[in-house]
Length: 197
Image (cartoon, rainbow, N blue to C red; front, side, top):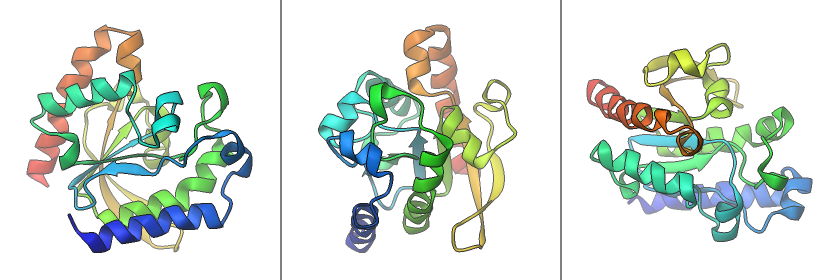
């Protein structure tokens, strides 16, 4: 794995701490949860915000939904070490509430910087909050598993084109068993989008 990229990602973490991003979230969180995986990955998974287990361990997707994400990766012939996993919001919101629009906006420059460093071929959004950043008018029930090229305005004012595949959040399958197979099938679409890249 590229040491230079890893160092740059660590600089993004340092910038979040130095700039006191979302201080009220930071005050009640145990850890800043930046990301995990391969800094040279072709695929980046983006969730919404850390939960309790993630906050305790300082790593994204390590609880029940993380175990299912591992199953999704395995079904697509991938491992966590092949991909990079992060969230839009890097601190756990109290009581696992949804991140607010202001919180998502505050963290966007840092997520954009992570993408800029990693340069993935495919971005996989996990859940509605993450998808809305890249496909604001889409409905996840209609768009899931379909690769879309989108141009996103980055904080530097320049547009970047990304190939985005929205998926349901793995947690959705824990509450709704019928989504389990949908998520497994959609994971295969991620790999086929990468192969067509």
